[in-house]
Length: 193
Image (cartoon, rainbow, N blue to C red; front, side, top):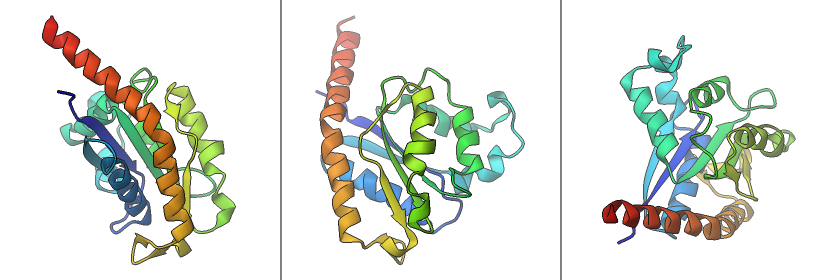
């Protein structure tokens, strides 16, 4: 039996409710509807007080360590950040500074961001892709960028954006399936050993 994929979304949103978290949750749900998985949401807003002041991973509390391990052990990642001053948030980057540099190699990553206007739409290609290229992750071809006007009561309402999110997931599925098959093969090898 193939184990379910470990699907982890990281939301850089600092508030609750958060449009960024709502977008991450929507993407998690779209993927979970297509493939058996164990979805998990990591929220920077909840971790922020525990990240502040830590310079080394060994200085972090267990709650943050568990979230870092979840990201490192994920089979598929969804990362979403609000845009501040043309880039991802500082705490979002600080969190990923603690991720081991080899932990995300070949991991499929769906990139998403939210911002106040379309001016920041290039954050996905100019900020997020380079960050995950450093990790040698496989950033998926379509990113999802949403503005404030795409939400009503913290729910995506823009039909075109909802369709784009669905298309991004559909285009990601072949790579996600490869990941799932590789995980199943590794589980069978472990059982045989």
